[in-house]
Image (cartoon, rainbow, N blue to C red; front, side, top):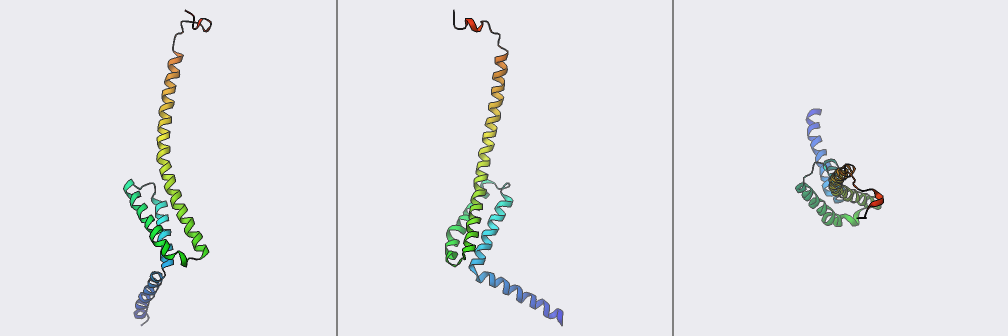
Length: 138
């Protein structure tokens, strides 16, 4: 008898919890924003440019469409949490964008270092035909 009651009771409780989160737009919004930031943090190194574009579009929808709908219902602590999550997402994006730029600078720096090294080596191998004292005199 207990087994027969426990299975339907489980589904009733599950449905009640699911409906509660669906009926509470603030909690639903916070969960979506948390998940978006967590997924972005976890997968940022594997994203292709197309995935970044899709991710950014979804984030913009959450921030520009969904956030204004619940903003007035948020507590001060929840507003602070939202601001921190939005800031974290933008921080991830900036670090990713800078990472591409830093790779470029590293490559340029490596090439410049190699080139300068060759110039210095070539300069050392020059046989100077004039002394510094006679430099510029004909």
